[in-house]
Length: 210
Image 1 (cartoon, helix red, strand yellow):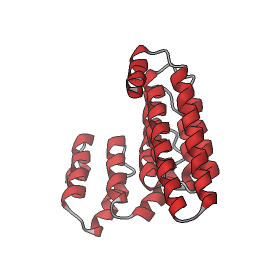
Image 2: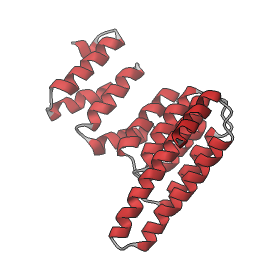
Image 3: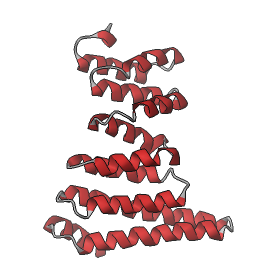
Image 4: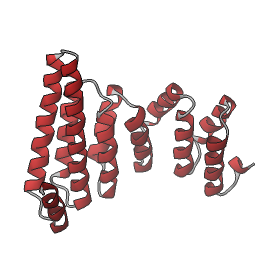
């Protein structure tokens, strides 16, 4: 059976095919077993497939993998939490963000920014905005700084939409909390742009002013 093939790319392809063409819950056991595969590509596919069928079960398994500090596992879990996470995963997401280096920081910033949209704790959101700023400002990787600006802008826009919803619901306290996030995110974006030295990024930012 392809799921037991010696080649990891064959096992991965088998997982993808099962997820795409079959919908039965009887496949859950195969996906759970594949999470212990030696190939990270298979693990990632299995988690994605399992999350489509058993979200709660997937989140439980993911929590058990949080102790694994391999960058690939951290990326896999961050991708999952960016879609299905909540404040419960905030500490893990922030820790993995701050541990990331090089190009991995680009992916982690993107996932973390998406994840923050799932959070309801406004203190976590503020702390998360600062984390994105803190890891990107001293980075020598231009792509990391770009990812930070993009994520912070996206979060400011998201906060604006949430503030408007709160205003319609006549909830001034929540509206003001979201407005505070807009202010904080915008401040970080302005500072990152002001201190940018990469000519390509400067051209991008200047073109956005027009």
